Amino acid sequence: MHLYKTMKNFLMDFDYYIDIYEDKIHVFNYIDIEKLNDTEIVLAMPAFTLSFKGTSFVVKRLEKREILIEGLLDEVRFLR
Image 1 (cartoon, rainbow, N blue to C red):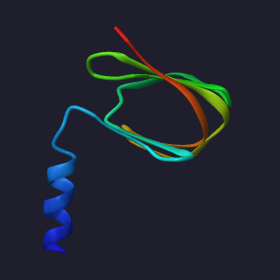
Image 2 (cartoon, helix red, strand yellow; image 1 turned 135 degrees about the vertical axis):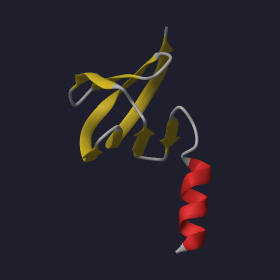
Image 3 (cartoon, rainbow, N blue to C red; image 1 turned 180 degrees about the vertical axis):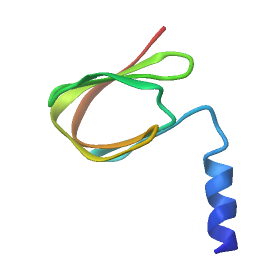
Image 4 (cartoon, rainbow, N blue to C red; image 1 turned 90 degrees about the vertical axis):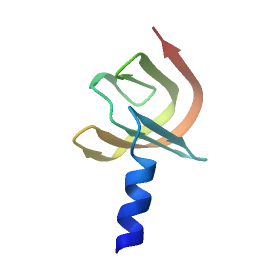
């Protein structure tokens, strides 16, 4: 269990963390969800706004400041 906690602390010691896989998007430490529908998701991050556009977006997991989205991603934008 010690190794797990060490790795988690190492990976999550950032202002934010974004993983993009084939059909999943994982975002850690977002501030707010500004827009959420099946084709667009906009998240307020600590220093910018993050926009995802695609199709068939479904929230698979939602926790405090952490979200896992499944769907087909077409575009990612960082907005100031």
